Image (cartoon, rainbow over all chains, first blue to last red; front, side, top):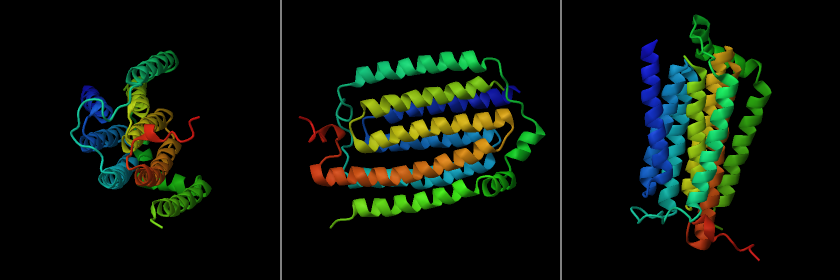
Length: 168
Length: 99
């Protein structure tokens, strides 16, 4: 199954590089475009894990809606573009790097200890599980109440955003 | 395929997100870093869903995507309000409660 491994590593390296671009870029619009690469890479990882429906939801919601929202946010707050080094970052940069590396070390040690050597088996049952029909059966049968709660939450968030952003 | 490859990719993305939240000054960029962290969690959910051969992980990932969209909507409204009041999206300038 070396094709899958090669695909995984290409996507993973692209995602990590683009994620570093999101947090290190000096231009806010470039950061948003790097974010698109990370989100598309995540969708590709979902396809690799045969979760088709979630992958397309990721493309539609994240790349289609959330990134556009971010670009509007950048436009409306007149974020500085192409500014000099350190203007977008605060002076706790080094402390932040230390914290992130520490958390990464702890997480990797834990993961290697807990899941070292476990394999994902790509069977026909897994392909069946990724189909939209299976996902929607689970969503509307086992998770119906959480689904309704989430729709109320979305409504509340929408009203809240309008109230917050309104000029009065 | 090794489960740990996916989990470690998610861990790396999560830590890059932590760095972004702590080091960025602009509110919009902090929200982008939060999105990175939420995506890392989603990759974990899908990987475990494939590992235990149960569809619940995918449904959870769908819920996380929905919550993330709501969070970005409210978060950007708050950043815009900060911009309107302080004439800058700089989160370090919100220090009126500092004694």
